[in-house]
Length: 441
Ligand code: PA5
Image 1 (cartoon, rainbow, N blue to C red):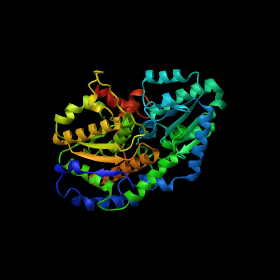
Image 2 (cartoon, protein in one colour):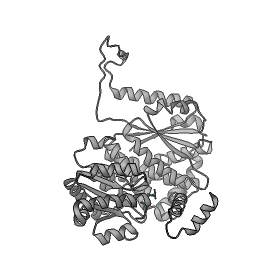
Image 3 (cartoon, protein in one colour):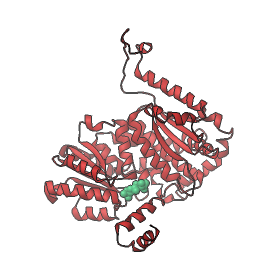
Image 4 (spheres, protein in one colour):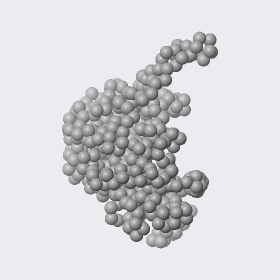
């Protein structure tokens, strides 16, 4: 099991940081387990690593094989929870440079922007390639993903005809409702579902994440197995539970004025995991004028940009540092005397050792500078361990939301920009809103 270590935050925590929260954690756990708290209808993810639909899982593996055989490129269309999890796991267990080294199809993510330049660039790239599309949208009507899907579907139909396109389009959506479901049924696309009881940001272990990951050749069974082992441990109540400790520590730090959490890691491949984590905690806690602001940093790169602020800026920050204790490769440094590299003192050292000392030195410096550090150690960047990490953060996030007294499973604030945008775009049904907006500017 991954290890949680609070020792580098203790100087900033009251003595009763955990004991005073045990009742709240017991209640929060019960709300998650029984699904009778705020947003309780969206707690299907709690047991999903064991309750998942085996038939659909087998279909995901079969479909992934088909896509790998027939396509040079997979275009994944989705936004928010319908893309971040897949991209996070893909990059973390392979590489941010996956597309340069992959043995199967290249994978590109789109549908997360309205930039014509970004969309045209990708449309141009695949114009001469055999590509498939996995469109992912639980609601089936999100503007960004609907627009991208329209453009890539039209390109597929121009290249391969409607029948050829039909065999290259795979839709992941609500199992019976929504525009995408209707279109998929009408056109006869292969479909996969996001269960009703699982919201977007908790959906990475459903078909929303598993299909693109299986296309990349990632062992999605191991991902679920890691999540299932974490589930077995983290659902046990008690003060030794690392998810309880993490939720209690961050709640206590927040109560003491630390309202920004930086998720840090020393692996560049972690970058999109940070993006996934930011959505998970940001959308779950940021409401009712409350919530820790989640941000992420990549070390050591950001020590040369954000390091100054972290060390000496406003003291409202704490860090959660994820550390992978094993790397899959080594790199021994062999400076030769007189080569003027200035690195003689590192002769014979492995780069893993250097990275480890950077981590230790940074933790100590930041703690000395007034930044509490919560440390999370994970064995390696493999699907099994990443499955554990995903479940750890999901469970801790559910507990944290309930400790804060908010609904961790809704996102009402996301609608505000959409309403304005639809009105300004002249979407039918938004006429009154448009008049109101025009009266303001
Ligand atoms: O967490 C969420 O619910 C959101 O981030 C959604 O995933 C995002 O808005 C995309 O929605 P949909 O899957 O309906 O296209």
